[in-house]
Length: 368
Image (cartoon, rainbow, N blue to C red):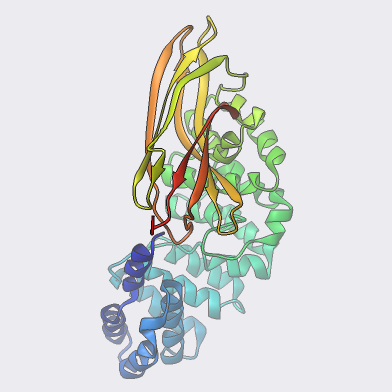
């Protein structure tokens, strides 16, 4: 995420949003002290990040809603359909996650309700951390719900490495704890749900790749929905050239190909410019081959050492003796997650995980 994008997201919780919520709560609960709510909310608001602003709204509501937890959440249930932004509704499950852990089952039911307006994926993790078995038993029932939002919550909420949240150590150590949920969703008709299942499994491949591969081997991969999940769940292993993962998508054999005319242009570039990779892929086989083609960029770090990142390039079936030309262009610019440093950046072309060609470009210093 770029700095500009992050700043834009912060404005989901701008002063106008807080005022709007205050008006809506006052309409539901006339005793609401809107003035105090806004005073608490606005203190140092400009300096807060997106998630800090979300939590600020949670705590300002907690300070101004009834002390009785269930009464407060009933007001928030009425507020949910009156908030006009999906991400902004995350404050509602956040309230439950922060202040409802003493009322476990009732709070979990509230999270199930709130997820239909945005998502309760972050808040439910507080209950998973508090009592993993108890929360997973409830979430397993969610995985059989008629609502795709609730079914997705069952999978997304217990993802071991959910972005923007803490890791679930118990499930990281033993992914089988959440297996009943994944089994229920392995052929889900909703793409929204299937993406979550695939992401959940991809999380697990970082620490338990064989567990995922063994489980997928037992799934009916002739089912289109299940096959979709498997392909996307194995994306990290496919990029790494794992033979079993490649075999799942029909690209398990050693590639019988040559790469010719590989060029990296321009040879020198400045930050913000684009680098282009181009080459010909030539079959050495009389038979058709299923191929996964990626490229690996070796980024120069501040220390001068390098760190590699694999990018997807193309998947194709190459006919016997066929030649295809492939080209990919990429902008070399800074992100909040990656800063570029001057120096020689190596680039590799990978076919079914095997390095088949290598080149480089020089990233110039700004002063050059």
